[in-house]
Image (cartoon, rainbow, N blue to C red; front, side, top):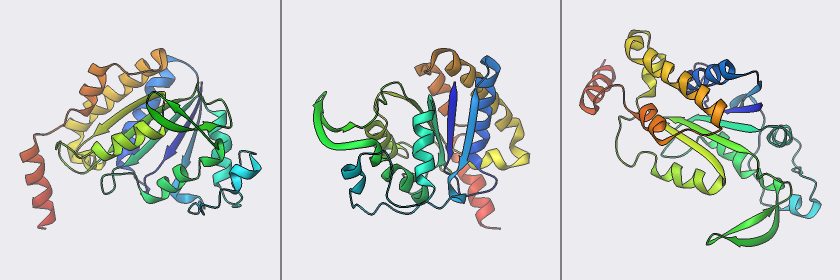
Length: 229
């Protein structure tokens, strides 16, 4: 398979990429894949102008001459697109949201009603694309943290979407937490193997991956102790 990873973390040592790399390791154990990772923060990707010139030209390209057109080509190339990013203010980081905003050259202005929702027609056949969203946050496992993001992704990546939302991910970059984080990364590795074989994750696997490493109250105590230093 051809796999595109869009790394939306702005940090050189990304917390979320720890689990994404483990997921890819598992996929590669299940078979040989072509993998391309794009660190979005390193690329020039301007905000969408809202000019809709792409809907006039219908060539699958944005009129702005930056790296986004390369990303659009890679999306068309890939069988699986993995969106890896930290949760920022209950959504995705702004530089990654710019990438999403500027995928409209892959669509047309014309609309249709589908399953009770109005959507734009696509310029290309994207029905076979598979999307994986791996998002981590610095909060403990608290109800509602990812609700807005889940709704947004369900609307953006219609069809073959698997989404895993992981709390407490700053621990993944903390060496002293390895007794807790190593088992989680092994679970993501096994999940990658499962995904490569089935092109989906079962509900039980997602629940296991999203289970917090520490109880909420203990995690909060650790964060607050570090904040007080």
